[in-house]
Image 1 (cartoon, rainbow, N blue to C red):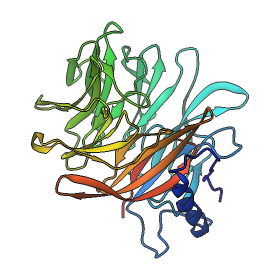
Image 2 (image 1 turned 180 degrees about the vertical axis):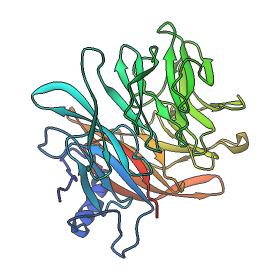
Image 3 (image 1 turned 30 degrees about the horizontal axis):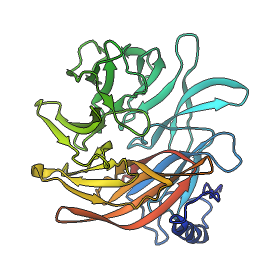
Length: 376
């Protein structure tokens, strides 16, 4: 089994502790085929799927790894995934070949079996940022020129254009119940509009929610995307206006809107992500740290769960399904090179304050990572 742990010599001094953790991981990880089963024989209830480029490799692969980093497997070769695996274990991904610049969109089982080609770059569209719904029934992808295309993943139906006004640098997102699609659009390349579409019919001409937020900037570490609450009722995102980061939490059914102003300009509020109970948000700070903010009852309490040095930037936090772990990327820059390491932090919350009890190094050279909930 191919291992994807690839450490360079470009870590900061603080990050040497990660090397020790990783060394113990490699010594313990001796299985030839790991399928989310702990050494004691009990299945993991959550796993992490991610895309990473192996050492001396030309193309990334899709891997799965246990939250403690002890069991890892190469699931799909030559593949990049932009969304979490579905509950039934399906994955959509993009593949490229060395002899062609064209990208190919596939869907497959979590272990790479039953691969099916959905679309390839052609004269009509250029594929990027494909998203698969959690129930495996729906796929959307950016098609270029502001267009978002939809396909029923079960029937393999013809492509339907959802919109032609996607804002540049953004991607769509499915709600956790797979019934809704959130987009960031623009009417004039200046004003930003959030729209929510239903997946329950193929007519996308009438979104169930639409609001113009004006000439704001969506603050994110990667491509801009609307995040969802675990119950599929709330959307959360960060915008910047006059250099102040503002986190918005909106109930798309009642229209109730909450504005959370981050008072400390050094913290900021990129990549806002709601906890499963909606009482906390995790954000990427301007200081390079991951912060957890207690937001219930407008009682803002800030907890820093990382300790970034001047060479490090932590971003893209994602809560686990139980709310006791946070997945994030740690980027280190040294001598003009960048190292991207995927971390799983075990979180303890006492009253309204959070702290990290344990840091698990999962892999580096990582592009994106996602939680997968296993059906035990």
